[in-house]
Image 1 (cartoon, rainbow, N blue to C red):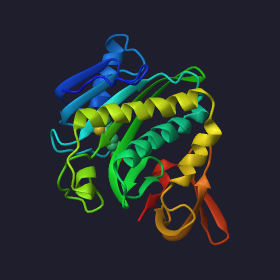
Image 2 (image 1 turned 30 degrees about the horizontal axis):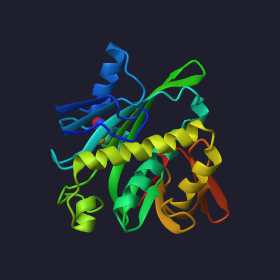
Image 3 (image 1 turned 120 degrees about the vertical axis):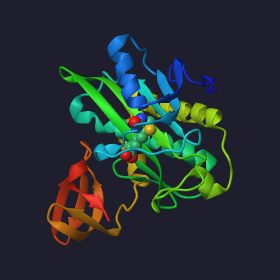
Image 4 (image 1 turned 90 degrees about the vertical axis):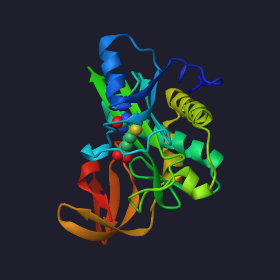
Length: 251
Ligand code: BTN
């Protein structure tokens, strides 16, 4: 059902399609434990029975309507302290993909949600394995809401809801894998500064007053930036705080 992308060098050249599974991230991990998996291997399914999201949440997706897949990467050139670069690369690649197909405004909500018109259209779950002082393997799980017509959550949307158009899932996967490889190669070529600058350009809420919550409660603040290790920098009056992923939420 899914075709191998024609224009990539290694991403998607080994494409494993299963009609259904628990979670493509879990399946990719299981496959890596059992046997050698080449870099760029993609595991894709039509239906996840236990799709996993960030913060231990579930990822729900109507069967056969959306893209749910995982890419096995081996960024052995990255130190654990630099792993946020991978988040940047994957976020930008989905941004590139959506921008090619959708005329509306696309934003990246820290750290790696993709929003169209302010609503979540894609979630990313990156699971890294570290060996010694370097990353060994990354399972990059991506869920893109493509043709799903409706959502129980008001903050979620799909490419179809926004455009009124139906998208071919196989063509969409081929395009997103191409974008992912292009951004990944940009990182492999050392263009960290350019990648970070682009990530900041598309960052949702950058420089704007917004409401957040941390362990001390609700507060109004302004996003000032993101540190190189991926912490969100928020100013609150005179005070500046840097937050790790689970320490702050957008309200
Ligand atoms: C999030 O919470 O925003 C991350 C969602 C990630 C969902 C994708 S779907 C494919 C892959 N397999 C999973 O179980 N999760 C990721």
